[in-house]
Image (cartoon, rainbow over all chains, first blue to last red; front, top):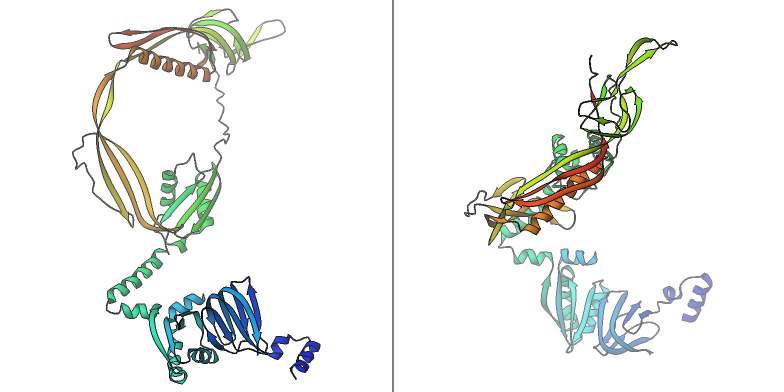
Length: 88
Length: 398
């Protein structure tokens, strides 16, 4: 179903993340990560942050992880990021 | 800008703990409550939230079975509440801001740039005569009018630019001191007579009748070029006279005496090492200071330093000061040594000769001797010069 919607969006020239609601991650090196379209925090410690997102959950691991800001649509994570993992 | 809004609205540093703190965070994001600087410390979360949003958060606490503790309060509402008992303090801040605003409406400093011939004091006086003074309202200043007034008052000023920056009136000036003026020529008939004794070296007559030639010895007051031009007919008979203004270049060898004497004893200042300071303060151009010689210094040197209170670069305030350093001295006298006196005498002679050269004289020989006589340094001698000796005088015998 999702694939069909994404194909339709692609043929109409619409941004895919807008239609599917998929999380958009932008990072600056390994010290700063912007996440848009997240669906909430599952767990937060200074070594790992688990996020609810579409189509799968995201686990960010690292050290000294802080959340510089947290709003309904986006968040910014700072610290030393070592791994970004997508899991079901 | 975001930071300013947060400060004005107030914000809190909150510690979140309990069974499911993440749930409370998600409830916040769902209800569009912004959180920032979220840190996990020993299993507890600390973050900042706006004071207005915090009231809404309290409702979520029970739902998420968590606990909220306010650690710090920041921002203007909390600042005002903290100082609510110090009403005068807050009123003072308000008055201070209002006073600054009032001060910013006026000019408190007038600065000139680019002037070398016309002093700041002279230009300030001219401006004050026209009503441009420190303390005047900015809105009444028309820079174009001020520029035109300065140009009209001083034709030597070729370009003026006036601008208001903060509470300062900056006036930039370009001067032209090399303006040529045509002096009216006096055409009254006259003779040229010898200004002093000498031997004519060269005479070039442009108008008038020359009465001497090169090689002639002349005395002071002798007519060199007559302003009377006699007219003859073809038979060489005198038919009349024509009066002209005699004009000629007459160079003569002249012997000129030189004498310079000064006492070897001269006054000197012996500084006692005692210093005092005197502060003058002007507030709104009113002088507040301790004047007068109240410290018992009879004679002293004064060194002054001036300043003005300025906020930032261009916000001059109506507070000026001048710090005088008074250094006491005792008047005494000393004697020049022979070598010092000779050096001074030589310097004086060199200055005198330089002055003669500027007047167009050529110095052929300077036969001068310096001697110490009765406590005086006496320089005597003769200068041999070649110089212009013609000087205008009424036509003789008329």
